Structures are given as structure tokens and as C-alpha cells.
Length: 296
Image (cartoon, rainbow, N blue to C red):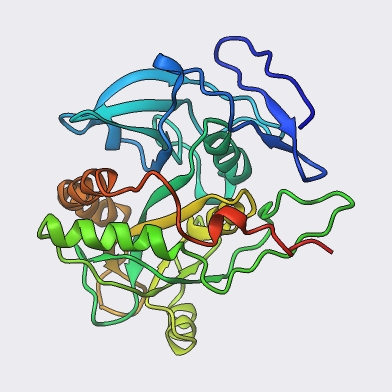
């Protein structure tokens, strides 16, 4: 392993591992007691303001891909630690098509995070889900464009397997937590990720419904594939905040999205906090060796 571990406060280092790009240094744990949490949560601003969640410290990360959306918050609740990042910044000011997804995911890895739980606000396409329902998606359709969706843009060609985009083990943790917390969860669904920032047309939603999409949002991609490229487990909690275009006769508004998310926040927090206690020390999934046999 080449590369050093010299760093200054607030800036983490990196090393050159098996890859031709400088990979985040998972050995640099310079939080209190020399350890950093292995679980990350990425969501909208406001989650860290939930009662009972304490912010131990802020960590600003420099990455080869620019600045992440915000400082990383090393949080603690009931003795459980996790790293939180506000996807859209604080206050909420970065639209989905301008989020620096590569920097965000890279920063988590640089802090030693092995599993990421993402929270997404989505529209409901499948009529079996309604506003307020929570879905743990297992598939994703990428309809975005113009987003930097890989860390491999040099001479090395890497094709990761994304047959199952969300980590099965990490999804299972969320589902077990939902059961333990008495929170109803839809145990599967296909997330169609659109570019935004506009909402979809009626015809687009009809098309997405025909190709098997259950929910629609704007932030799942490229978070999912970037995490896989860094061999990081990734699972999502998708909160249905409104019916998608044309599913109901109501006009789509951001007010409905925000209000439904507020109402659902307590259940989301319960599932996430319960999941923290269920995360095993060792990973038993394919994510940790996703780059094996992926290079040409």
C-alpha cells in the first residue's frame, strides 16, 4: 500500500490501492478514541434536528471530485454513532441535478463508512402505495442524464455488477428494524430516477408505470452505483410524499412533499435508529468485493 497518513484537522487523506485512482483511506480514523462510525445516513436537511440526535462534531472533507454537499456530522443517539450528510446542503439549496454525488459518496468512504442508509422523497406510481407509505426499494431504473456517475474516467475500465443495485444484507437490516419498531414497510419496489429539477409529465409517468416502476424520484442515481464502485453497502428508505403526475387529479406541489415528509419523519427515524442496533460488525454480502473481476 503506497501513500501516507499525514493529515491536518478537518481534511482526510487518501491512498493508492488496487485501483488507478486514489481511493479513500479507510485506515484514517481520527475521531474521538481513534474510531469513526461505520454507518452513514444521507438525507434531507432536518434529520439531525430530530430530538435525541446529538452532533458530536463536524467534519469537512476535501475530495478529488470537489466539495460534498455539506460538512459531515458525526452523530450519536442512545449511544449509537453514525455519520450524517445533508444531500442538498444546509439550508436546502442544491437541486438534485447539481448535487455532487461523487464527492458525497467519496467522503463517506474517506471517513471509514461501510454502509450507507439513504432517505429519499418519492412520488407513488404503483397504486398500491399512497402518500405516507414507506418503501424499501430493491431495484432502480436510471433515467438521468449529464450526471457524473463513475469514479473511473481514466485509462482503467471498470464494469461493476448492478444486477441488484441495493445491498441485500443492508435492506434486510432495514426490514427487520421496521418489524421490530412496528413500522409498516413495503419490502421491495422499483425506483425510477429522473433528472429533475422539474416534476414529471403525465406521459412520463405512464411510461414509467409500463416499464415496471413503482416510485419516482430524483436522487437515487448515481448514489447507488457510486457506492458500489467504492465497495460500500447501500440501501434506501423511500418515503412516498405524493402521487406521481396523473395518478390523481391533484396538482403536484412541493408543499405536499415537505408536509408529508415531516409527518413521516418520526417513523423514518425509528427505522433508522433501530437499524443501527442491528448492523453486524462484519459484512456478509458481495458489496465488499464488488470490484473483483470487474476490471478489463
